Length: 319
Image 1 (tube, one colour):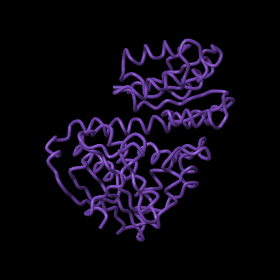
Image 2 (cartoon, rainbow, N blue to C red):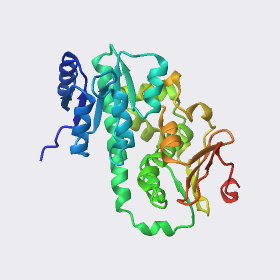
Image 3 (cartoon, rainbow, N blue to C red):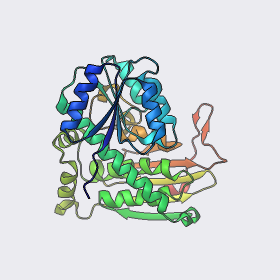
Image 4 (cartoon, rainbow, N blue to C red):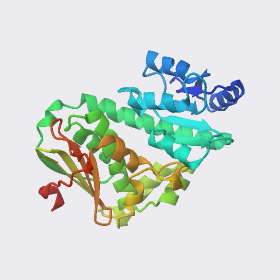
């Protein structure tokens, strides 16, 4: 049976823009669905919450603008992981930053070329399908993992890391939210930590569509044969903590915890910020950045006080 084309919701109040974007997407073998305002788009999204795999969204529109629609999508229990790519002529850095902080996957500023737009859409769909697969598998994992108190794990590959993310996410009470963040941290530990793929290099690999092939190539090199990521899991009265440690030299982690104006138009570099803001109650890097502790608070014990996260640590994970 022939696989159906991915449905992309395109939202723009200019008919000319809709036609151009629709042609670009159709030529790339996507199935665009075009609407002229945010209200109509929201109606379609609510009617069939599994229909679309990405939204290409204009910011300035009548009836409901792009920022309001983005806010509704990211607050929705089912739609919140849907990648929303903003596209607008409103290109001031603060406007772009506002969109990313509200949950936009990417921010295209007009005018932009067809190749760049399609590269962003391709990456967004690949990420969305990977996250959706993780969530679906997470739902099927035995709920007895909630009984696990402590564990220690090792892995080498991206697939092993994603499988472990699914397993450990299911040990928390917020599995579908946590699995995406854990997956990002574990992929980061392999690609940047153990294999040394730098930021600029990943940008180039993404543009070429060869990132995963390069990861597999480096994993097969003799110098990387023994490199592993070690993950320690512990359940305490405060919540669930996972410590992820790679064998890399570390990185300047502080600049990646929040969305950065300097990386607004890059094709990657937002995974840690998304994990920090959406998946965990606290994300704490230690030392040079090759150790990170991700914490999910229990339902009754919230780690965030009125002035921010409370400085509480698990002695077992800090050893």
